[in-house]
Image (cartoon, rainbow, N blue to C red; front, side, top):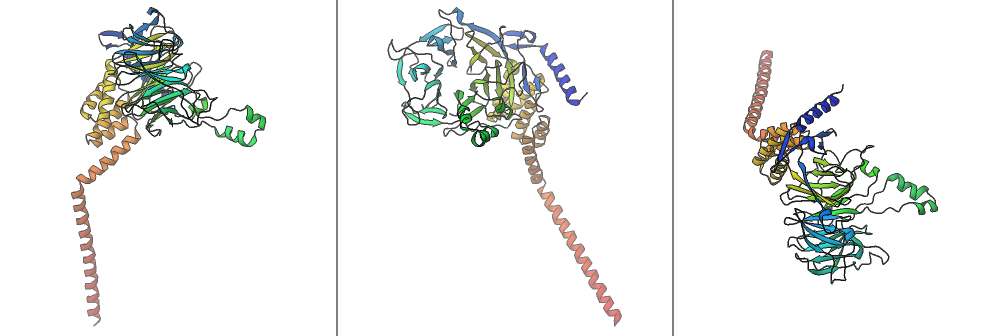
Length: 499
C-alpha cells in the first residue's frame, strides 16, 4: 500500500469523525449527517480533502409564495438587508426582504408603456441607485432607491460596433467613480465602458483569444478554402459575470471554455485594473478553475457568478456542479461546497450568488426552481474568514489566534499552517515561520522566510563574525610573518656558516 494511499485513508477517517460532530450556526444546531453536500478543498498533492463545513444550508425562499413566481431569474444583488432579483422571463426587477417579502417591483422604465424586456442583470451602488441590464431592449436603465426612473443608456455609438452586430447587455456594475461597465451578448471585445454621464468610452479588458497550436497551423497552412469557411473563426472568449471590489477593480469570470482550456489551466477568473490589465494573483498550487478533475459523474466547473470581499477572498459560483468555490488573495482554494439535485439544500441550475455585508450568509439563486437558498456561516467558517481578514490587514496577533482555532477543527488544513507562517513572518519570527510554511508545503513562503532568517542571523552575529574574521586574519598574518622571519634567520645563519 503506497504512502499516498495510506495518507488518503487517514484523511477520510478524520473526515468521518468530523462528520459525526455538530456545529453551531447562529442559534441552530445542524448535524453533519443531515447536510446534503460535502465541504472539501484541494491539498498540495491535488487530492480533494474533506473538511468541516464553513457554511450550512439554513432555508429556502420559495417564489411559489409570491403572487407571480420567479421565471428563469438570472441575477441577484445584496444591499442593506435586501435582495434585488432580475426576474428575467417575467421582465421585472424585484426587491425582497431576507425573509422573502416582496418590497418593490420594477416593470417599466420611462413611462408605463416603456416596459423592461427580459433583464438579465441588476446592480445597486452605494447610494442605493438601481442599475438594470435590460437585455432584450439593448440598454441599461438606472432607477432611484425608490424605483423611480432616472435615465437609460442605449446602444453605444461607435465604429467598432457594426449596425448588424448584436448588443444585448447581460450584466452591469458601477464603480465608486460612477463608471459603468457591462457585459453584452454579441460583444467579444471586452467589457463595455461608459463614464458617469453614460457616454461610451470604449472597451476594457478584452479576453485573450483561445487558439490551440494545432488548430491554428491546420487552418492557416493545410486546410482548403472550403474547410476554412466551415471552421469556427477564432474570437476572444466572452465574460460571464462581473463584480466591482472595494478597490475599484473588476473581477470577471469566463465560462465558455473547452476541455483543452481547462486541461491547460486557462484563466477562468480575472481581476482587471482601470486600464484593463489582469492583476489577479495566481500563487496557489493549481489554476483557479474550480474542480481540478472531470469525471463521468462530474463535468468541469462552469463559473457563472463571482463575489469578492474587502480582504482579498472571493467566492465563485459553479453552475455545472451547483458548488461555491472560495479562494484567498493568492488564489489558494479555501473550501468548496454545494451540490446539484432536488433535495432540500441543493440546487438544479444556480445562476447567481451574493453575500451579506459581514459575509455570514451566502444567497444562491436557482433559475429553474425559482428559489433563493440561504447558507449560514459556521463557527469554523467564522474563524477561517477572520483569520484570512486579519492576515490580510496585518493583524498578526489576531490571525495567529484564529488560525489556531481553525487547526483545532481541521488539523490537516495546509492553509492554516501557511496562515500561521505568515503571521509569524509578520512578527519577525522567521524560524518559526519556516517551520509552519514547511508544514503547509509552501515553498514560496518558506524561501521568503529563510531569506529573512538568514539575514537576521547574519545581522545578529555580525560582530562575532567580524571579530572571528579579524582574529583569523591577524593569526594568518602572524603565521606568515613568523614563517618569513624564520626563513630570513635561516638564510642569515646559512650565510654566516659559509664564511
